Image (cartoon, rainbow, N blue to C red; front, side, top):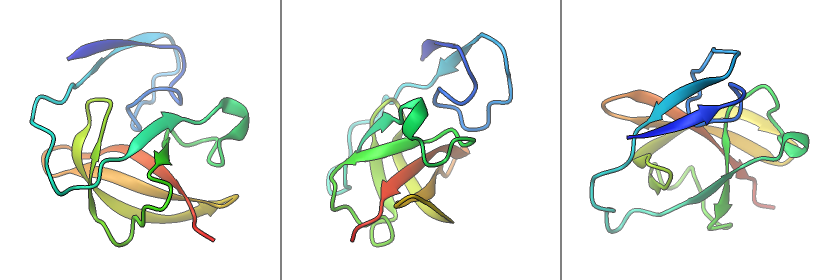
Length: 118
């Protein structure tokens, strides 16, 4: 586990946060081995000015750039998330498509934005 100092509820890993003041969040760290045969995704935060979903707490997937989230329901995420199941939210904006990231144990743990392929 790791403590994350949260300045705003839209800028940290818990998509269900509704605390609108400074606080600390106990963030789970992945302790399971990284699974083989499951795509690994690189994620990062949107900058405040370029988030296509400005009212949604989500990560953008930056690699691999040719990943098809519809064809691969299970992925491995860094940042302590581990193996997650992704489900389409059917929400698009400015060339990005939003997906839920879920686990069997915890349900929704974060949200991912994939750049749509041309």
